[in-house]
Amino acid sequence: MKVIPSFKRATLALVLSGVLALPLPGMANDHHALPEGVQQRIEQLTPQVVSWRRDIHQHPELGNREFRTAGLVADHLKALGMEVRTDIAHTGVVGVLKGAKPGPVVALRADMDALPVTEDTGLSYASTVRAQFNGEEVGVAHACGHDMHVAILMGAAQVLAEMQKELAGTVIFVFQPAEEGAPAGEEGGAALMLKEGLFADIKPDAMFGLHVMTSPLGEISVRTQGQLASSDQFNITIKGKQTHGGMPWNGIDPIVTASQVVMGLQAIPARQLDATQTPSVISVGVIKGGVRGNIVPDQVVMEGTIRTFDNATRQEIHERMERTAVNIAESAGATAEVTITEGYPATINDTELTRAMTPTLRRLAGDNFREARRSMASEDFAFFAGEVPSMYIFLGTRPEGQPLAYPNHSPKFNPDEGVLPIGVSAMTALVLDYTSQHR
Image (cartoon, rainbow, N blue to C red; front, side):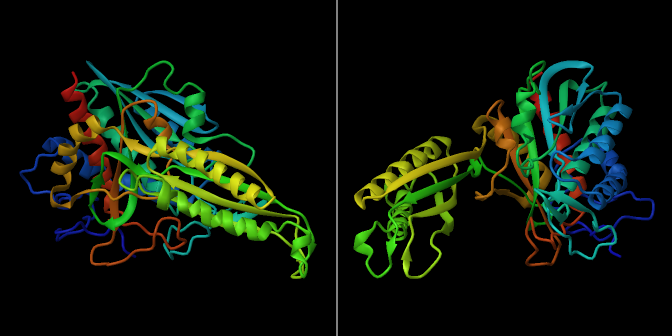
């Protein structure tokens, strides 16, 4: 069994004592990303972080049902002497660490929920959990890396709590449920945490989050402005007039009209939006209509998704979609009903904060620092970023020497545990640098 893959340019794995004795990927000894004593403490803590991750991985829980994970987190934060709040947004846990010196308020976030995926990794600690999801029995697995996020933040919480006497300011540790979405009929996630007063008593001056990705092990990346896309769903119902398929002139064909609407929707990002501003996507994923090949039906229903990286463009797309569908339908004598359900906004990194904290990430990652590529995936960290200046970073987990890796949400998703101390170091360094800059 492979215990912990070695870091890039490292020549030793974890020794039996569990102490990681080598620098992080791409980090020369003179980079000084963290004080030597702090880095040593992270190395000493790494076996415990790995143990937390494997325990959480083996016991995954779906959104709004993260009872065991929340209990593990709450017990840990209480043992560190923090003020701890539980049961926010169903299962969320928040710990507050007050430094001995005056300074700013910084928030760190990790998401706790797993996915309705049956794991197929072959790991000795693989999940065999089954659960109910929207009325169906499903496998449950941490196929998106949230187990790593929780373990990383638990590690950063311990390191920073041990530095309480030297710490300037306050750190809020936010362990969030239901990032992947709440069960049908329920609220959840970041939006519900804010709705229930997450920052009512103390509002952060800055907030940081991270996500493991299948980029090379040790790579840290970030970009200013839109990094992850908004995610909205739409439903368009085209109503015509049913008739015999051999005599379509006696009715109004909603299938032909729907086809014209599909093409009209594609013209919005391709021909109606400024292509230099932000990439956008409108995809129709479902078309339903008709029961027989010789009957023109009375209606067609279309469903799909809308993605973009700019919230103003997002609203413009909504308006143009409705106008396009309604007018095309009207030209055919049909009608169109357009319903757009807003999901997560675009995750937009604060420009000033990102520029100020990029040197911290560069020192930590060395040659492995990159400007992040935009991703059409979405993240409800966007709700936090809409409330306070925020920065969201990506951590690479693809095993060394492996050109490809199974992506997030795959049943075979298997990130390299070598990223865990890198994540702890990143969260710790961001807090220490930000608080030292804003005393």
